[in-house]
Every structure is written in structure tokens, then in C-alpha cells.
Image (cartoon, rainbow, N blue to C red):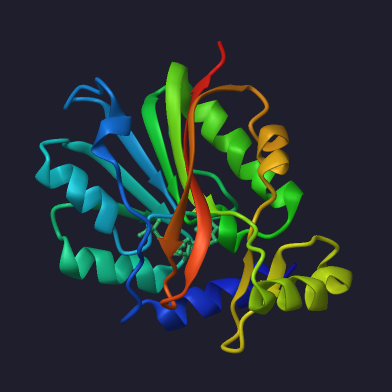
Length: 213
Ligand SMILES: C[S@@+](CC[C@H](N)C(=O)[O-])C[C@H]1O[C@@H](n2cnc3c(N)ncnc32)[C@H](O)[C@@H]1O
């Protein structure tokens, strides 16, 4: 998979696109306002800004799209937003209380590439630290089933599809997520329906998982 072409795609969307999956503050549980929170694939920083407004101040966002980071810096100059290369946050091991991973897995379509990101998250979390993920699940409507089938051969995974504007995305089988979460104990999982960045309805989930020490 060519990561550069996907980076170009997200750069192209950066000036105007609005992201949609929501932060449920209840899922932060008793996270202290001093907690170190990393948003991996932070886009233009909308979720970090919600956290900032709620009083969290030890916040860092990472995204591979330079244009997303630039938009975030313009809109939210008080946030610490950084470009990430090669999936490496450069955070110290065992230094982060919570990682937010919102609508990021959907953009990373290969199992191996997703596993690399989860390893980096595992590396930087403190023992007992948590990852809060939301993302998209497989749908059963005809529009989605057709595109899953159309691209399954090419990409080797049912649920991966191309968008006409050049995007490459993935909707996930629920069982697959269990494998991805190796090294974590799932504490919360709830299915939901999200409105996507393109205005469609899609199955999705929110999950909180704790790093196993
Ligand atoms: C759908 S957007 C969601 C952004 C943000 N999490 C939110 O909810 O507002 C996905 C973001 O992930 C970024 N992204 C995609 N693949 C990435 C990768 N391999 N590493 C880092 N960022 C990535 C894109 O540039 C984009 O900003």
C-alpha cells in the first residue's frame, strides 16, 4: 500500500473536511485533568480541543498529514500538534495515560499496518493506561456490500473499498478487532451508528481497552 498517496489524499481534504465520530466524556472515566493524553491521527485537532475546553492540558496530537496539522495549528493555536513519520510518536515508553484513536483505523486498511500502530500505542502507554477507540464496522446495505465485494480481491480484505475521490477506507469485522487488541484488556465495547465524514450512516463502535502490564 502506498502511504504517500493516502497522505496526499488527507492533505487534499484538510482545508475543509469535518470529522464526525463523537467523544463520550463518560468513557474517560476518572482520568485526571493532569493526565497525559495522546490523540493518534488527530486530524485538525477537534477532539483535543474538546478535551482542552474540558480542562485537560497535557495533550498532544499526531497526524501524518502536514495540512491537517497546519489547519489545527491555525484553528487551535493553543494545542500541541505534531507530524508523525513512520508511526513513531517519539513519546517515551510508559509515559501516556490515554491514547485516543478516532476514525484512524478506517484509514489504515492493512492488518499489519494497523498492528504497527497498536504496538506503538502499547509501547507509550503506562501500565494500566487506556486506549479509547472509535471506528467503523461492516454494514449490510447493498451500497456497502457491493463495494466491499468489488475491492475484496484487490485488497484481500472484505470491508476495504476505494472512494471515487481517491480515498481508501476500511470497515471492520467485529471479530477481527479482538485480534488487533492483543496485549489489551477490553473494558468497554458498544456498537453504534455514526454519520460518516461524507454524510452517510455507517455501523461503528466505541471501545476502551486497558494495557495489560
Ligand atoms: C477520518 S480522520 C479523523 C481525524 C481525527 N481523529 C478526528 O476524529 O477528528 C483520519 C485522520 O487520520 C490521519 N491518518 C491516516 N492514516 C494515518 C497514519 N498512518 N498515520 C497517522 N495519521 C494518519 C489522516 O490524515 C486524518 O487526519
